[in-house]
Length: 279
Length: 337
Image (cartoon, chains in turn cyan, yellow):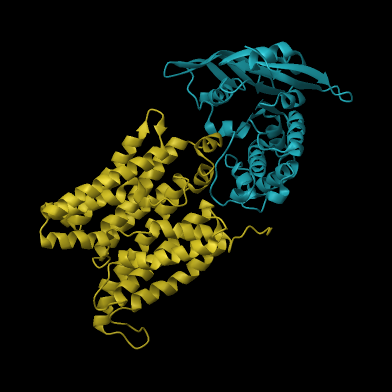
């Protein structure tokens, strides 16, 4: 039985910096267990919205609540156990090994060395990154670094299935958790983009809700239950992935002529671009 | 590709080795000097007196200050997320230098407080100068959005330059005797070490360690970036404030009591990182021990090389540290910092 109340509730959110309105009137619910993709052209406010959600950006109006409690009211550490954020790009110049970077994701927890190590191994496996564990992070390629960072944020909210006390395990698995991903695929090759899609699809079964910012419409169509489209700091529409993304919308928001075809075997909707449209 | 991530030694083992080596180094430093003292051939009253009143406080002070400088360096490099940051970047050394020069120039020796607690007024002036400079840097880099670390770096450089100019002005008007004292102070010297200074140093270091306690994990998260650390549930602005206060205090005491000692805070944490990686849980204690040993050895050399004359220890740390540092960097070329 799913919660009826949304896990993340954004009401009338507005952001204004030095008189410039970056976001206006955004209301959006992210439901427990779903994958919501946020798409929109460059500068449409996707990253600003993510930053506003986690109160890194001051709101000029509106509110954001997570699991029924306003985000600024959360104890930062308790929030960090349930909400993890993968930024577009993290710069880390210090020679941590891959495993050590992933281990940093366990900072908010006090589960003990054993549980931490087990979880780190699990997420590294999960992301096909086990072979990066002992290599030095600054020497990895962009895609490898991003996979380690993804493993880190997963480790942060990963529930330990067989914790010593069953009570604990049950509690931690029942806790709703949210993963915010900002352009996670930008450095990924095809195989790892596919891995990302499958990963995001599977997270729901672990009671992890995902809000993902993507540029690639096909990626959004492949992994999201619902898609929210932003343009010029406003939410244009939000709905079931298949229904929302239409040639008319793509033309209106991205100024690109597009057609959609379906994969003959999987019936997956795929976008095909047909040139920039006249404005 | 090697799988065992090119570290020479694990952090815990490095701490163990350094701990084992320290009694040896400390005993040697106490026994060796212009008058060498052998514990095996019977010590005269004079030997005991040299040991108790000169060597012992000097070696202890060197160890304490070396440790504090190196740990401050490690913390600051983490805070700035730059392995090449030096504790002097936040303006504390330059401020202390102005404070010391001003005390010498304006003859503030009459201030009774310094004499009261048994340290020179120059040291007191230096400490106040250092703290004022950091406070200024911190204020200027703090806006409504919190403290900006990159701004702090720039402001620190600016304040350091300003302090340099003020120092030059004071040099212009100083007489010969004052000039000599100013430049000696700036070179860093341990020959004023006595038990009073050790006793002043100890509680300050205690405060330093209390502030430092439990910060290693946060510093590790900090290396990922400020917002990343915040997402990991860390109260970033309070940690920044605490760590800046901590390093200011650490470097402030060190500079006030023995003058400017360059490179310890830069080189020691860097070397530890090269040997055993950037994890602050081992980096900070290992830097502390290595910093202590490094400064004790440098001071020993400063006493020995031109005995009975003494070199300023700051000169020795530079002559010793810099070529070694460059050698290590050269060795590591291709490998990472």
